[in-house]
Image (cartoon, rainbow, N blue to C red; front, side):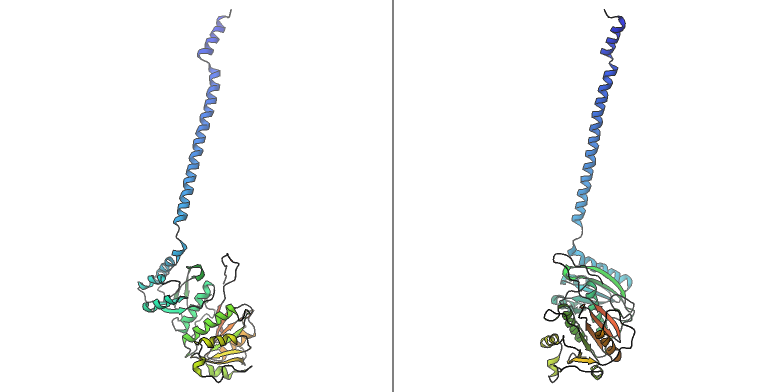
Length: 364
């Protein structure tokens, strides 16, 4: 028979089972804690998913590259107003890009660069100075350099002018660059520093036509082979006096009207003879006077940059001794160098070639 103490312990076990119940509570608490942690983890996961969804939505709402051009142009106009710029130099890829300029109220000269004839035609109605770009691939800065050279030849850019430049790579289909330049300061757009006027009487259209031809030759070569050549424009009497024929002159004895650089047949002839030694001499009005001329004058200026050889030295020398401008094609690199007054006025590099399917990386 169990004693009273044992019965008491039995009743305590039945009606107040402290130790066994504590174990059960611990087990229950662990389950509750696990559920709580699971809920928290689930809540964090939901929050992260929501955050990711928002980020993806923002990416979807990001401005499409097709609208970059309009945005860049609007910002460039604002920059021009705040800096009281004298000119806006801008590349246009479609007639829609011209719309912001139709409403602009500014004294700034508007200079349009384009490869499209429809843009050229529309620009005539908006008091915009238009420059037709050659159909060659250049760097974004290369296209702006052409605009600067054309502006100089037309007297649209002067020393001290502030110019807002809008550029890009036309093949990409949008503009992505705004550049603020003070003419006459050292810049990657023109190497001569102080702006130099072009030879007296040299028609701007003649310079632009020859520049286009030179850039085509530099990019395409002749019959698949690179060419090196010199084209001298302006002050033709002095240039002929300081040079002599190396070979028979193919342009001698023909009517002048048949020798103008605007003529497509003359352009083909220039390309055909671009591989012969010597320089082309072109009159201010665009008449080609000679090919294969040896420039018989020595260069007296500062040393030319490394990599420029006898052809560049001859071009620098003839522009130093006469009121001419010379365009030189480098046979080894395809770079076009423009000389005036014995100095480099500008250098235009062709775009770097790249593997199909990959974007070109072009460095100036």
